[in-house]
Image 1 (tube, helix red, strand yellow):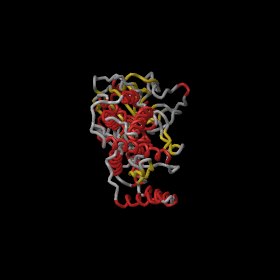
Image 2: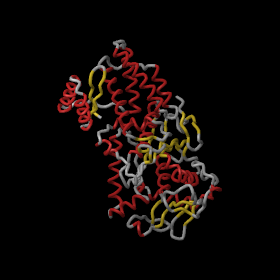
Image 3: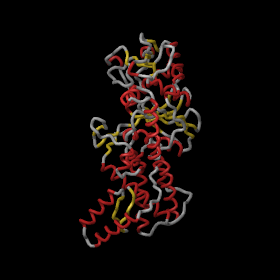
Length: 458
């Protein structure tokens, strides 16, 4: 099946052709474990999860590597602020990240290499770059990559170096496009680094952030692999610098396709610690939102479009997830699984293999479910249509993971629902609304339908 992905490097959709037939090598930039990842970070991780699931659904064997950045400017600063050993900080947040992946039903990577386990590999790559005249050692023992040593620096971020303000070098991990100059491969030890350092031919210090991903990706996927993913904020400087140092050290094309997801905004403003609008996965789950609803919100917009995250979006997601689960359960009560798909399934797959067009795929799925519901309500659904519907939903769930385990409604909740039904029967709308809000606070949603009130977990 022909798959097309938008390649950030070429700025166009391309037909995906794996390096090795039937196999896909995939590297995704993982978390920097200095804090708990927030819902904005998971917009990228969910996009990568859908990408992996689509590749697997159409028959590819995917080898997926996601790194753990456990040494960089941020992790060291956090350890200093809390007066703790670096590994105490990073192990805590790595564990929390794994918990959040599981909570959101994100398929785990095959490998989660940590930067601190690959320092010697990084020293070896830096040594090659120095030998090739692509890097130089500064007076303090730091090592910098010389961007003038290559001809195509800036090709990923589409930079025109002639129009940029130029500085000699940049030691920070992150910086703006105003100073795309020589970047640090190795950072000489400073007092504020404390006990975080390793020996090297240039003196004690630590690797630069960009070097970490170049080494870990190629160590486990080879010097030339298929797909590299991240958020748009990774394009520059991180991925730009990865390309420069990897191609210079290895003499290969490094990566064929670069894919990046757009930002998530909170109610039309960018997520920011200073604004206090950052939400973590446990906070959202504690607020009564289900993993399936969170997945729905993050998948409902195309990965290359900005996504506004709001309470209205969450309410819409909750209802959508309920509709999928409700009709799936209704179909199961009619007939067992079949072995053929409706015509709409082909359209659904065509949308997904066209650069992961999840909004279009969801539209196809929901239009199909609407027609199924209509036939069930009118008692016109055939056994064959029912079996096809079950199979379609199951296959769609292999991508979206919206189906929930059947939930047993607790007695306390069932009594509140019954009380609300009585209030509605008596046309006591005020009490009915109060009970609906009480149920919502307890994590349960009531939906009034032609078949009566239905209650489901948020």
